[in-house]
Image 1 (cartoon, rainbow, N blue to C red):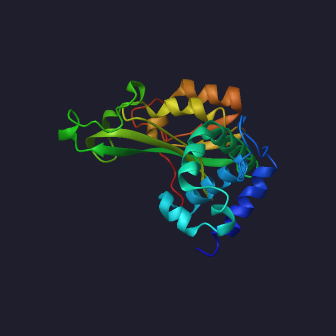
Image 2: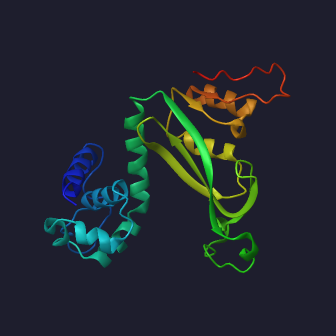
Length: 226
């Protein structure tokens, strides 16, 4: 992939302005590939939708693969997960300076067919992260798995998170308040709640716009631009 190295270098240049090269305290020798460079490789693979490490290391330039083995990269990337999360928040904060309108939504992520959920052992390592069942109104069906929450702008995805399927959409606002402010959020009726709207506005100056329900007091039909 001809542009992989170019994208990697651009991401690394941005990260150098918001983070140190060494993120973990090492007791042994200093690694050839710094923590920040490793994070840049990880973000580059995500940007290019390269989800296989074998595929990634086939496409990485020799200047990078000479510094780290694939198995070592995998272990260090897991150790840097918390630092990677912090860096994502910093990046989102910088991007948000140029955006003032976002769309918030969720989508179902099915783990297995509903008939197999009692026998399924997928993602059952930690009890707090167990998948579960939930009804999806947009698809008019019940599914077993998780729910993907995301905040998007016209350019890209600003923030995302996973939760068990039964977690209500409005709980995602707890994460949003720590990542964006001074903007407008547009959501569907699943985010309609007066208390949350008031809390977002008072704490972060976030204006949450949602369609009104037909049986709601003061109902006004949402205008659709032509």
